[in-house]
Image (tube, rainbow, N blue to C red; front, side):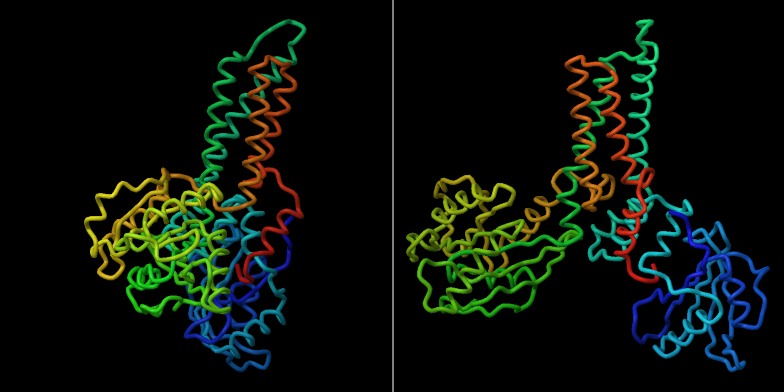
Amino acid sequence: MSVSPKTICALSTAPGMGAIALIRMSGKDAISILDRISGKSYADAASHSAHFVRLKKADGAVLDEVVATIFHEGHSFTGENTVEIACHGSVFIQQEIINLLLANGCELAQPGEFTMRAFLNGRMDLSQAEAVADLIASESARAHEVAMNQMRGSFSSELTDLREKLIHFASLVELELDFAEEDVEFADRTELLALVTEVLAYVRRLIQSFELGNVLKNGVPVALVGAPNTGKSTLLNQLLGEDRAIVSNIAGTTRDVIEEILNIDGILFRLIDTAGIREEAAEEIEALGIQRSLDKIKQAKIVLMLSDFSADQSSEEGHLSMNSEETGRWADEQAQTYPGKHFLVLGNKYDLRPDQLNNPWIFETPFLPISAKNGSGIGELKKWLSAQILGSFNTQSDTIVTNARHLDALQKTEDSLEKAKWGLETNITGDFVAMDIRQAMFWLGSITGQISEDDLLANIFSKFCIGK
């Protein structure tokens, strides 16, 4: 895919009225077009310089007084001559300026075309370009941190190092094949096996990081479940610091699912307060709420199961009781049904019965006593939530995979490396090992764009917003 010779333009700030709007031009003629619509020459203006400019219509009337920032070829985001026009934020003025640019030789940019040109002009590789979209979409400190690291090239650098190791590996194996008749050995298979094992282990850690990366991008769904009157809505209000959900002693108060966002340590948790679960609902509407609660358990990444710590015996018929021990056993059953989820039993209202702490709860699911009403144990709960997501990863120093395309390529890399490892362990001929290594190199290269197809690029950049 080659860069279009056309000069493109687009609104780069959000559509709508504001104090200031930014309109961007990029291409060979960007500066000369500015000359035409201003009546002045900026051919000798320094790169990265800002200028007060009066934009004029074809009849000479002043359309707006703006600040135009000029970037020369090789020193801009796209790598091309670029002009960024900061104008007054009237929707009418924005559209009139774009019409003026179109009348003087510009074409409207396609979604993601500015970033695509940056990639095609060598200003960034493909994984860095995709990180631009992640950075724009980041809604939390951790998501911003991960996207910024990737945009600065940390992921690309690590992939390049891995690929260079594999290139060295492949070259030794293939050189050995060239001299097969002379029975010359250039590669120590023990060392090659160690190298493949090392690269494979790192690729697997990158694959494991996607679980974290995905929730950092999209938020972590956390379901609050339990029998009626166990304190789910009270806990939601306590975590949010506001009265978001109605709290009542009447069973079945929560009829529908309530969702709110909570930021803990820069991670967005989507708290889902559900209807109390009991075997026989009071009426049809509550029954629908209970079914939605059960559905949310399937969708959630983390499930907090509340029990009434002050209750000695179950006050509910059926599989879930208000008693902590019964709740824990039910949580164990759910954990076996959904092994990829994190479950925590919360013994609420423990301040009413502190003697219950001496009871030997017999279940595998982690347990934490809290008081949703007075806030006891809430700090520990937040730490637990954060720890389940971060695990052994550090978002400041570790590379975190956030893109499903990258995950797919890494999984295919893993598959190829496993075949190469098996080939070395079973002493199969070197040409088959080299074939698997070349395939692994291909998939690693597809992440950064060292090996990519035009339709792949078009699909990636079409998901960007216009103006980026």
